[in-house]
Length: 244
Ligand code: 5RP
Image 1 (tube, rainbow, N blue to C red):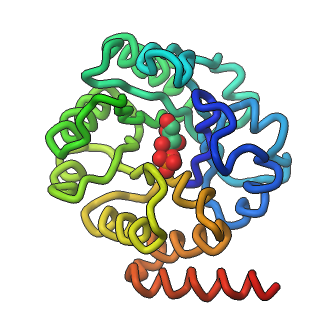
Image 2: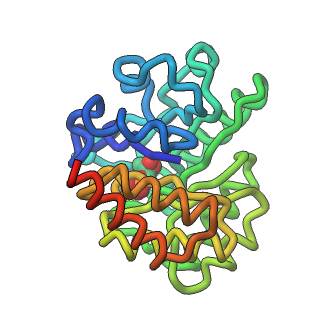
């Protein structure tokens, strides 16, 4: 899954200033696209026939308390947009924890009424821990309360216990930009340790060769390619693109 929804609270973040220029060339390589309805309606061509995971919560910007989100879409709109799933941030341990959990349970109810799955995202605020204990807690609560699948962050120590104790499939976010080999290694380890897939954004669109990177990530996720081999593939594709 390619995540490009960051603008809903970050505005035109690096790599997403011109979605038409930077992201459209990546679409042939994405299985699913996670984004806001604003970008979907204005930039993504109607010929894009793969799954849309719609950002369905929002409200605060990076300038205020991120946990103070509300549901940001009607179910009728999600149906009109023919989405494959709706995504909601859940701030376990955050200031507005209960409100964000309530957003999630309402979306689950709305989605279930029409057969639309919900993706619960473990949202971590600036000051919140990202350790294995926290991820286990957050993923399990989100799954128990009804989402179809969970997005979380990879933790190097004990991620297998996060996946094993979560009764629904888990995908990992990429998080902040890492060197490509490190990002590919993280994706590989996550899959080995029980993740069903990745929902990666910055590590793809902020790469100096996003088309090469998204293809390398695909190799890791779909072909279980080892990180070093996927990285060699990345370098080959990057150099090929440079030569033009
Ligand atoms: C924003 C999100 C993003 O979609 C998610 O963080 C994935 O992007 P990245 O790989 O850049 O972390 O849910 O809240």
